Amino acid sequence: MDSSGRLILMAVHAHPDDETISMGGTLATYAAAHSPTTDTYVVTGTRGELGEIVIPEWDTPEAHERLGETRMGEIAAAMAALGVTHFENLGFRDSGMVGDAGNEDPRCYHHHSTTNLDDTTEHLVRIIRRVQPDVIATYDDFGGYGHPDHIAAARVARRAWEVAGDPTWRPDAGPAWTPKKLYEVRTPDSQRDKVLALLESRGIESWWSEPKEATPEELEQWHQWRAAMACPDELITTRIDITKHLGAKRRAIQAHATQIKSDGPLLSLSEQDYIDLGAVEQYRLVAHRLPSEPALPERDLFEGLR
Ligand SMILES: [Zn+2]
Image (cartoon, rainbow, N blue to C red; front, side, top):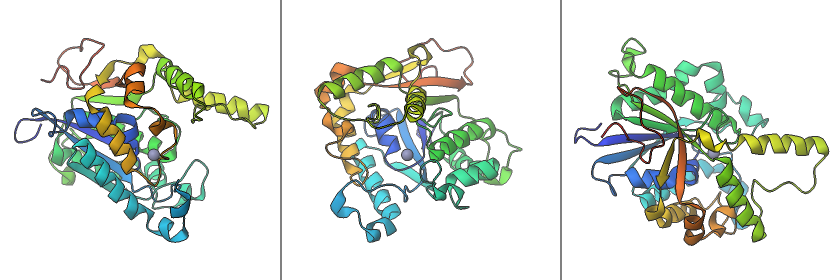
């Protein structure tokens, strides 16, 4: 809770754009710009400097040189679209995709979090102890889709959830603060299937479309990966209705111009399509420190705290 009594959501992410794609509507819902009783903080682990540039004419060696800086500008524009005024970056280096040389760079988020989880976590704990969030939202253990930086973000957020309220844990990192609820953002199987069916009916390829040229082993691996990106519907505890913020979420996605294609799956669907699909962002309550078990399912991340 902040000094004016607002409840605080802290979203812990890997790269610029993840926050908007996975939970942009939720971030807007709780930003002080849209709700007088809550506020939103976004923390990103890296600046996304190793990612692809999806606009061919921008994809130059010089643009890659300054990609981290460009993406910090893009996330600033995305946050402005969502009405979020607080966002910070932990300053780790992007690790690249699974198996990339970037994974072994000692400056990268993946390497830091696997070689010294507590030192890595201290960076986030300092922010938690200063901002005093009531709720933390991050990814599941698979980091949503297996990216090393996403897995790092989820591990760091979980470790911070455990230790931030312990006054004996790194007392130099600020006075202890105990967040009350921890969530992971998830895509349930039914939602994945509905979105995929709609995209396929319009001939739009997505990360959920089966690869056309693959060996049987590659295909088997791909099916396992796709299954891990979603979860059984019964794991979902919390659905946030984002209908009011679909337009803002779309503008925030567009702000991440170097990495989200304007004709790709995320921007090919209209606001009405999202309403027809069920305009919700979905979560699993992983842990809580409420005085009693919350009534599930919930429609508010601050249920039990208001
Ligand atoms: Zn990412």
